[in-house]
Length: 262
Length: 340
Image (cartoon, rainbow over all chains, first blue to last red; front, side, top):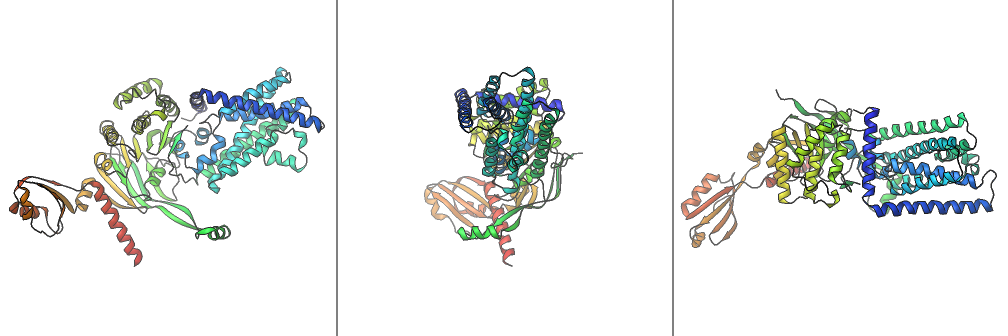
């Protein structure tokens, strides 16, 4: 019933439905995607100007472009494939898990994959264009794709962990959003800026280090140890997220709000 | 021998309730000394339903109906007690239970709001892994039976509530479930749409043998869809028997509609104990008879003796009134027990 093949078919069908749902509003899709593309570009220009004035050793324009390529790639991929993950706290608080629980598929996979964020399409396009700007080799492209896939797993797992707080705290939407925003913010800075305690913070509390830091180092100097760190962090986070979500699910109290699937 | 579709024994569900005094000071005090109490949403509920049966599970708001259904569909874990659906424990074998049941929430849609219903049907066929040929045949059958042809191509957001509910129920039947849980399926619908939904569900129960467990505040749903009724209040079962027994036991009033030959004859109406005039105009007369004080045959005999009657009809009060009376009686007895 829930064999890997069956889950893949289910995931593909959900993705197709998400895409069809997003394409229902063509103007909205295009404007949001273009808006996100421009917004990312503006930030990149701002950061380039800032670090051009206050130079940081080891941080050049190429590295800034890389940071934004990894960050927007990971967040974009997470938003396109698992766009509901960031809404998890609200879904739990409003009792909207009922619909997913009544169906015979893994609840967590179903709920996080049941929406596509339109703005994320702009993120992904921006990510690929900006990465292409640093003239990558084929190996660079392979590393890049692997790293943004791991980064997306890290982002989604973190969203699931923050969203699952709602099982214990009740209305945790705002708290989860703040933590999710912190992950996005920390992911836009080059890794040399984080030292000492802040380096521990971005690896073990707000795991932005595995969205941007480790991938940029890996791209600069490919090493098996770094690759294992990246894959290992993604695996540990996803396992933790699944465990915490299912632990919380036992406390789920549903709700009585009128709700529709979007 | 009929098999058991749903079996529930000593089911309990408690929720935590945080209590605080009113006002800002109460709020701040509750931050320092939170007072948490346990509320019984479902209290020692036991009942069973055979395969092919249609059972109404009714009660006032907050009685524990929806919580029970959510436990039976694997949505929530109980605090204590046992329950099986088609021999499986829902909160332990949720996915296997979900494959064999369907749940329709009147206030919660499983259709994608922005997509045509037909697209959701395709997705649900994938979710339930219905083989393609089987799905095509079943879909065609449901489209015809539910008259969905013109609706399937429209985005769900553009459908009326009645049209959407027809699509919801059809969507829930694509995988041929053996048990159908309906949680207020006719809420907010107009009379025609209600009738359509009831007809379709009754047909499913009778022709396909789908077991139906229904919760509804609409007495019409109960009367037209179910043979047996379980009434729950404050989390406990108050009544579990046939709908006709419920009528008999709680039917203490009847309404008599009289058509007189002569409008002047109204003056001849005798004062009878237990008989109350609801309406009198021209040749029309509507009376309510308390059958415990005045048996209906005696009341009729006395009226026919003195009034020139052209036509007469005797009606039971609506089911709604019977259920309301049942709730009122129970509320009064609970209050008096609490006072003791």
